[in-house]
Image (cartoon, rainbow, N blue to C red; front, side, top):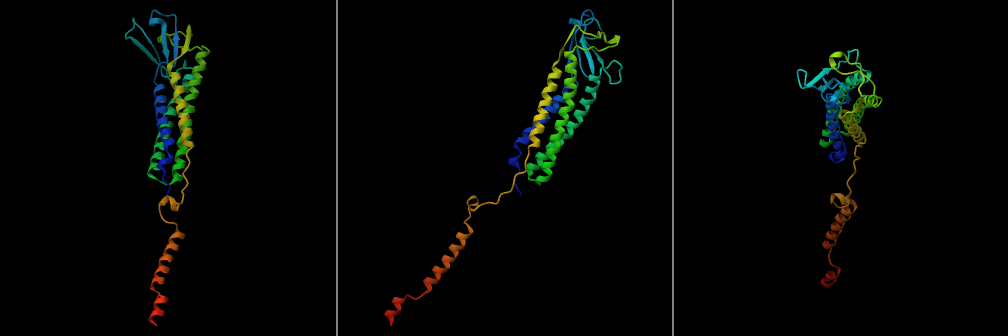
Length: 244
């Protein structure tokens, strides 16, 4: 059986990158700064700055009950735009798919290091790499969709208790979208490294690699020893003539 541990260096790096990318992706789904809104209502919203994420919209206020006010955005709310609703669904899907991808990649790397049969290892790497790519797709779609909405300055019809206007003075792409793109890139590279795995071919050791004598030389040496022994056992012809 081929020694597999030396063949999974890139796949181990892929596992680490995939895990880091998955952690980043899971983190951005809960942050509030996918969109940065600038509003003209500075009476309630301190500094006229608000943050809109996937699950809630937040702003700072010095006249309301707490310093930071956050209002939840639900999938079933009538004002929820399609890009945010899609982000809620796809981010949760990406988290679940990423968990399976991490488990499969870890299983494949473990079996490769322990020298388990390469057929199952190869299949596990292919499945893990494909799932990492699926996780990246589930991350990129809502991230790019929300980024395009920000660049187009699209509105959101927030209810009155949000204290936010439907149209901001201007809006910017928040750090959450940037981290989402970064996590997707890590997941894509991770999937590529896992899919590039090739089971190493077994190689028969040669005489020079093992330090053993070549078979023909060994046979020749053995026969030479026998011949020499037979020659030593013969009576010297000159000695016979002297005796006679």
